[in-house]
Amino acid sequence: MIYEKKMNVDWKLLHPYTLKDNKKEMYYLNYFNNWVAVFICLWFAWPFMNYRLGLLPLIFVLAAWFFTTDMKWVFKRLSFDLVFIVIWFLSFLPYIFTGKFYFGNLNPIYALICFSLFFVGIFVNHYYMFFKQNGRALRNIALFTILFFIIASVQSYLGLRQYPLAARVLATGSDPLMQTYVSLGIGGFGFVYSAVFVNIALLYFIITRDSKIRLFYRFLALFAYIIITMMLISASYATSLLFLFIGTLLVFFIRGKKSLIFCILFAIIMILLIPKEMIGYLLIDVANLFKENGVINSKFMDLAKGFVTDSFGSQTNGRGQLYLESLDTFFHNPLFGIYGPFGDSFNAKVGGHSGWLDLLAYYGLFGSLPLFAAIFFLFRKQLKFYANHPYTSFILTAQILFVIFGFINPFLYVYQIGFVLFTVIPALPYLSNAFLKNGEERNT
Image (tube, rainbow, N blue to C red; front, side, top):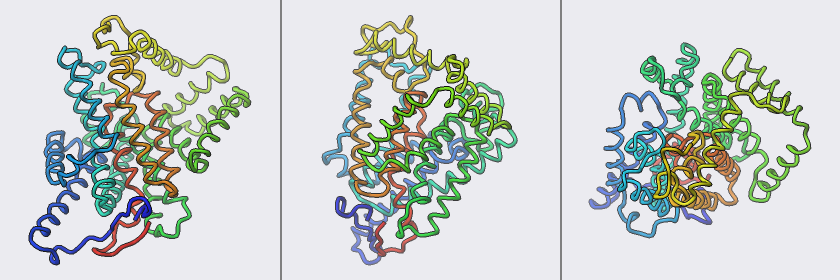
């Protein structure tokens, strides 16, 4: 069991032929439900299968998953995070009824579908981890998702060798060769950044000194980490590499709330004391490591320019202006946003490059606070589950980076990130029990 004192997780899985008929039917129903969850992971984690299958099969699979669950979980008292997610979706109803439900330039129906896919992982995780306490299902989710990420990363890496800018082009959606890129299995924005969070969580198996983690899983995690990192470098997203570097540092220093506060204060002090020119030259040295990758090199050089010359490059400065536009628009429409009853969506400017700030600008506090509350209660629930467990620093690091990422990138419609953060990462510690035989019990 992951944390026996708190959860009393029972790993035993009885053989179906030892059960009575009604319990045997329930066993097979649960068995089917568990493998449906694996198919859901396949769709989210493997861009090639996502492209080949499309959205419609996933909708049927999600419906099959829901109707094969133990329906008691719907009628029993749900956790606060699930309640607030439902409230958040209900907050869209006034905008929908008045014909003012938009999210930037996205098609409104597409935006609603993406929001739903982004947060469906919260319900999947709650069902297996907190309601059913189904360790075998969580092990399957962890194991197969890692395998899917390995396969997808290899496909993306090979495709990027042929088309070096494909991953970045897929993020813009403005190239006639897009169909070629996705048909080769090259992952785009969502796959790249969800892989960053997976990589940070995989460090748990690589650096944690826990004798209960078998050597096989350490090698599997290390192999996945290397393959994913190679893919990330080839994808030419400078921010993803920066997040991976910061996340790797944080898991070594964060061990709880006190250490988190200490790290924040230490980082602020160091930023104030270290000469900004030194930071700039350090970024230049980092940029020189990627001389052969012109995109990453130019991104780091652009950022370094701001520290060395007091004037950021065009790319960094342009993003800063977009963030300020969204923030200014929110200050002028704080309650209901520009799509609310007092908003002016025609003349207002929203930068479109910050998940949190854009959401506040579009829907104000009315359409944002329920989501913020849901994420807060979800993160608190996960941290309480892993309290006093070595995995705490890893899941806390992923949560911190998720919040930061929401400020600097649009992401609420990038459903891969949500599924990985809410479903896969909380399940990863169960990976070391992936190949246990029926009835066998083992502590992580």
